[in-house]
Image 1 (cartoon, rainbow, N blue to C red):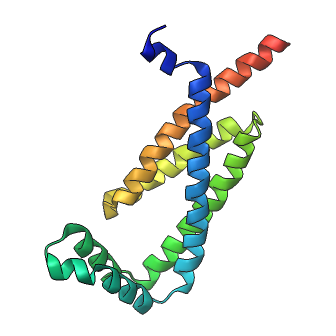
Image 2 (image 1 turned 135 degrees about the horizontal axis):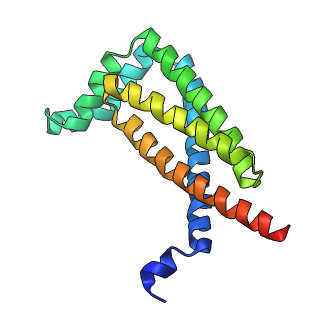
Length: 166
């Protein structure tokens, strides 16, 4: 069997599906924690933290892209942005965690529900990306697209197995 064909065996796709769900669960947990933290930290604390983290790098290279991006973001982080980020991360994390638990339990109705919800997240993330150009939103969106495809594939596989048992 060729290496490429073996790579796309059902057991390997299922393994990638489960690993992607675990990765999304870890991200969802960080989103929940981050949402709570963002809501309660002050803007001055955030700015001081970013300054402490980027100060050494900016002294070495005042044009460092990442350090300047972080500093600029912290300086322009308004209260409304803070509340939006907290609500977005918290709700996104809780909803994803709920869906991931159902998918890991192989409950069939979770699969189409997850596909629709992740699709709605993607639509909203792309809408927000058109304003913010945040690389984090783009990264989350790419992961969500991959998970949607894997979820759809897993759903089809489980449904066909269930029907063949009947």
